[in-house]
Image (cartoon, rainbow, N blue to C red; front, side, top):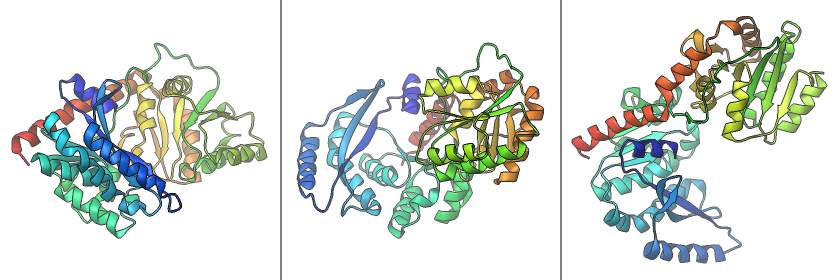
Length: 375
């Protein structure tokens, strides 16, 4: 929604169409009746509502039960088409911008063809194999990508995965990152460092984030870096196991746990720490990396995809091998070099490259070019 708000600030009349899933169960046929009723209401009485200053309209689609994930593009597209003609009469759009290739790309292709306008797709999904692990999903994803007038991946590693898994040349895909909220994520007026060095991890405790590996890496450098502490912020099914592992290693006074918080709380946490750690096995983009930059805080990350296109110079942080040894050496290096980082440079870099207003200006330029060229 932040991207749409930024576009509207530039004078683009950007609006959002979004699917509202009706979950069915094979033992509850009444849900199908509810869906049929919602379908009729959507055709007769759809309307724009406002979310955070953005006009939004919703359409129903079937999911769950007999409607397996590889059928969702069909039901999603059917739901959009139920209101599309009326939408077109009220809002004669010049371009369709779909976010993700499978659901929205497939449906967006219908909207673009009905309106005789260009289609642009931005892909965020990671790992991208989620959209190619079934023959029908891969077919519909590839069909939408090939039919689009312009396709964006939010990171270089995602572009490479898309090209490889869809059998397309990388040059047919462009890269434009996500942005961050400048009102929330910004550097502190002045940062005072204490005697200790505080590292922060933020996320969901799931296996792909490899918190287990980060804890092991910390244990390897705990004696070498006695001033280092680690804060783990978030929730998820793996948190209890992580807490047990920290206690088992006798690190409860060095590795601290904090509950999930809102974005303002995350920003405050970033500003109160010396560096952020990304320990993931795979990251499509890594929004927390640019949010950390915006707060003037460097980032230590494994080579897991997205961060490799963000930590592009040593002044922004360190990239290490995607294993325990890499993380351990990275933690030790950050401890040695932490006073070499310049918060003003890091936050300025984020503003110049990743602000939503800047992203919106680039998108507006693409929109103008596509509209002038025609579908």
